[in-house]
Image 1 (cartoon, rainbow, N blue to C red):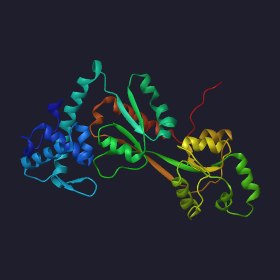
Image 2 (image 1 turned 135 degrees about the vertical axis):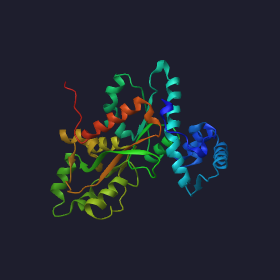
Image 3 (image 1 turned 30 degrees about the vertical axis):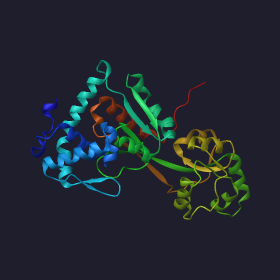
Image 4 (image 1 turned 30 degrees about the horizontal axis):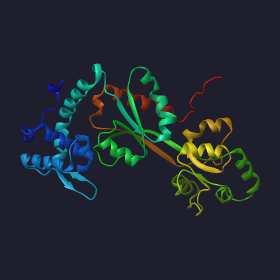
Length: 321
């Protein structure tokens, strides 16, 4: 019940609830610009409401920085004390707006390859049980901006968000593998002789999802201890699924997450060219929008993902013919 929620602080007890909602949105978003769409307000209106609350409390709430705003010590304490009450009120509004009293849909977003390969299989049983989910795809910075603006409830990112306003959980570690088709693996074994693997790969076409080859360059630095030679990719494709498909068909070599190529490795369509003791890892994080936990469906999706992620380093089962 709302009556059991944390009390509004004495210094802001007479403040308009809308001012406090605006304050909390700015605190969580980190910028006036990002908070405005989530509130359905213009940026000048958000600025005016923050100024009105500062006048009411007699305290400065935010300091402007190059990128966004930084809450003052007083603002941090105020956020802690009003968040639970405001989130409880928002939860009541959500429940009253959802059809037939059913929990509102969960808005979940993440990288396209991961959503297809791991996330959808993890949440499918919940959807079959009546949970409504809305999926979006994108890159980390874009997704975190959308989370702060209220577009998403849960986001899977490839880095932990800065600051403490967004709650995040380590979800899983992605291991990167250097792979090629059996044809190229055999060719390297026969032709490179005493050459190091990274030298022999100079004569093998490279497949990448980006011209600047971020994953490949990171692998070279981490495993081989040197920069990748200034040789661009022979083939550039839109995403990592396309990279795996092209390499499995014999286009060349690449570096891809293990989760995307395990089935190809198991069937022999791809060969791991190297087995380093300390290969590069990338931690995935599950980030939750403040207040989203009041929807029980969000909590169910969050826990399903955290449980399923414990098995993301094993192949998915295949249908028997």
